Amino acid sequence: MDSVWVSSENSPTFEISITADCVALHGNIIQLLSALTSFVRNVREARSDIDAVSRELHSLQTVLELLEEDADLSPPDLVERTVVVVKHCSSILDKVEASITILNDPGLSKQQKRAQWLNSGVSEISDFRATLEAHRIALGLALDLIGVYVS
Image (cartoon, rainbow, N blue to C red; front, side, top):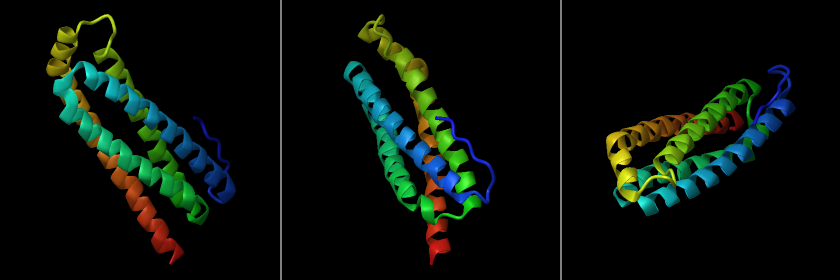
């Protein structure tokens, strides 16, 4: 979802932007969690790695919900930077979903899906999980800064 802002002095525009971006990302997470579950049904060996990504996505959802609630309390400069991180998260989710779509191609047999998973999927998903974790931590720090700013 694209957001438009005028300047860092325009706090309400940033609040709308971050709220809209968080809501959109939350929807993308729900969709991705469904795709991940479907993939695990076909490739059982992927369960522990996919569980790690799912946990990261659930944690990210919590952070996004808190950011939505606190958007009006945030200093404009922090909101501007937070919006960038949220957009990067959205980009990462798109990449994870594209990867899972390829790995879970309905034209492939379970054995082919398993082979693809073992050949490239494990490392790809591990990298995505680490990147999601880093972004979740950055958003968590933004929440902490909002708390300090409000105090």
